[in-house]
Length: 215
Figure 1 (cartoon, rainbow, N blue to C red):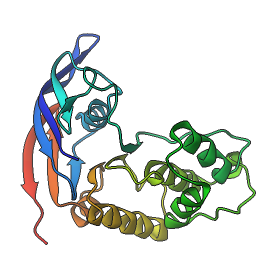
Figure 2: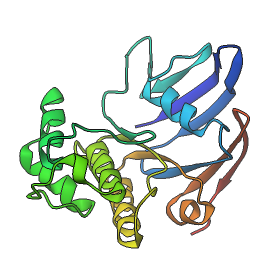
Figure 3: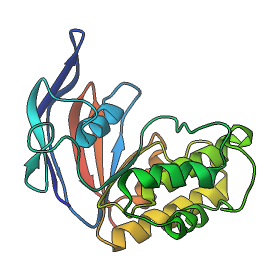
Figure 4: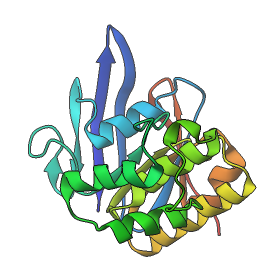
């Protein structure tokens, strides 16, 4: 699903967090966002998803302007900052409850999403007893369980061991093959170059470079 960010500026309490951003994202590709803390990576993900609205400019998803024609992109999965779920419920129960909001996936799809990130759908432990890595895996499973056309992930490798990192890489490769538009913010330049087709560098809310990653 094509995304166009057009002259997008966002001011918050007098501070410009995104400054005249111009970029486009195509289906079937993984775009990596890199930059220092407060460079605008997370804010750009929020802008694409409709979680913030522009001071000026706009985001267009599949020909529709976010915040005007549509409130949010219609088929999107996202993990922004730290995942949070109902403490007393299992991972499976949490995702089943969220899946009911749209009603587009079955319990079996939820189980499959958990398995894809290396979690056991029959695990009876409540979320409050999950390790940091398990919580991160659950957040990623939540983002992908509806097989969305757009996937936005903010630091997806946080707290993951090597097996978890490998799981996420396989999931991203599979989503790309299915034609999803994927944008990943990550502070680890090595990991980002390994998964991305293109790398966008942000600094002080601006795009300062854009490079294609050679296979």
